[in-house]
Amino acid sequence: MASPLDAAQFRELCGRFATGVVVVTASPASGAPAGMTANSFASVSLEPPLVSVNVDRGSEFHAVIERAASFAINVLSQDQEWISRRFAASASNRFDGVGYRRSERGSIVLAGVVAVIECETLERIPVGDHTIVIGRVVGGDTHDLAPLLYYRGGYRTLG
Ligand SMILES: Cc1cc2nc3c(=O)[nH]c(=O)nc-3n(C[C@H](O)[C@H](O)[C@H](O)COP(=O)(O)O)c2cc1C
Image (cartoon, rainbow, N blue to C red; front, side, top):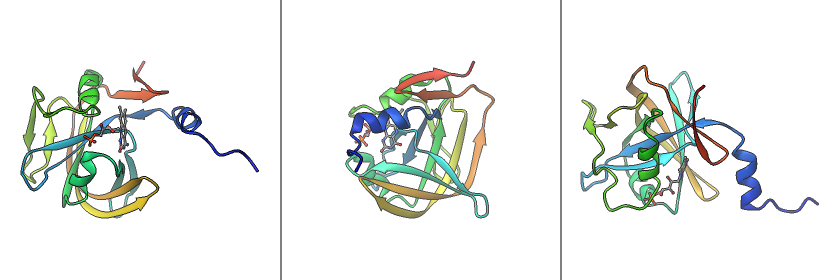
């Protein structure tokens, strides 16, 4: 039988898949905005339009997304590596100095992103140490900016 895969091997394997970087935002009951960097975003279904993101059950953001009726996927642009780092590190207020607005639907939309995808939470599926959060896409917006990429544990840009 093959030996069990360790975390480093798992990261090495999955790290060869280049992704974009998003900040998932949602509002806890307190009303203050919350957000977390993620690269596990995926489109799931066209009819109906569904997307997913996987959230670590050990993260603080998990407690927020567990209760949120809606959330937004903010696709970061190439100048927003610092935002990715900010929303992946522990900080008392990740939104300090970060421009954002509330959309008409109440989504938290970061300034300067390539796209925002507004979702109503459809389903939460606990798998392993993460929860797959499925959202029904209800709106969004795009901007002609170059995206931020993530590959083999580091940030990249197109070209
Ligand atoms: C590029 C990148 C991608 C990440 N993708 C995910 C992800 O898909 N899901 C996840 O749960 N955490 C992901 N993380 C880690 C979280 O951003 C990190 O654990 C965060 O600090 C959790 O914060 P919290 O405990 O305050 O919610 C990623 C981090 C980076 C830098």
